Image (tube, rainbow, N blue to C red):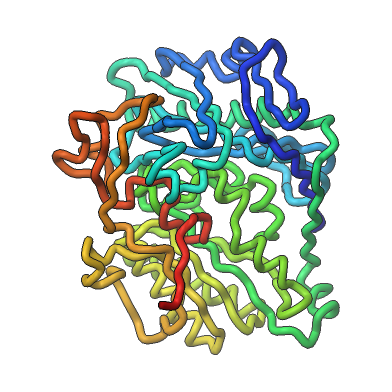
Length: 428
């Protein structure tokens, strides 16, 4: 598959009379957007706001972050199987409003939501402090079931990103990048002397409200399978979960997975990037055994020399990570793991809930238990009250002056297990 991603760089975002992109600014007609995303009788009200880099603004609790994009040429449409037909995406041309994002918030369902600060200490930990964010505050009707609430907010966010993406349909991109993966047999002939490498992409599927969607299908219901990397880049995988904010993969991250982008950068140079194996993170032992068995089987079927495995979440999924690692390694295939750590506030505790000697090449996204202090902000979009109850918060996290003391896991994307974060390591 060959995908051309046209990047339209957005440097500013404003409300205006017309929804359009002009000279690097995304203008948004509020009434048109509300008309496009409204109409769900499960939602009592929708408010729109804008948060820009450097502003003294806090967004919380954050549900999802989505990048506006539009399918310009080729099969399928944006968010296939959800907003459009379940056609196979990953080829043709897609335009992306790079630097813009849709953020959903409000009285959101779970306690595992996050914070995005546009300035101050918190901004140093989240990549979304650098995007121009259209923030959608959703207020549900009384006594709405949690899964219904989550679905309503999820669809509102996706519809908004779809609506804004249309503004880039006829805009000449500032940059075009081409990504291509050949069918397996053809790819082997192209680079027969390079090691064959694939990416094992673990998707959060631990139960109700811990869901990820593949072409609109809840990934709990799938067995591991092979997909083209460009399908992921073209919106085939969407977030619907409320795992801890620091290592949740919002929809934005799935479409911009840096593991996939980096593998493409070295494809044909250092190795042959043959594709992506997607697998889930279920909770029963039988489901874990089934999925890890299939993942190892597919890696062997592709005659791989090495895989990169990324996790989403922590605790229970650590077992899935280790099962995948052990079984793939047992096939004679080298593994590199990407995870994060919950090593205690002093960093002295066991980093993962499971471990194995086969996991001898591990990359960390950081320690989510590290305690940070977030200064008060002049403006809050959403609600401060969840600060004491969201994962990483505790009684007294929210101080009387509006500042927050909490663990790093409250920050959206802070310890991303696909590397979509701002932390790094240095040798001292």
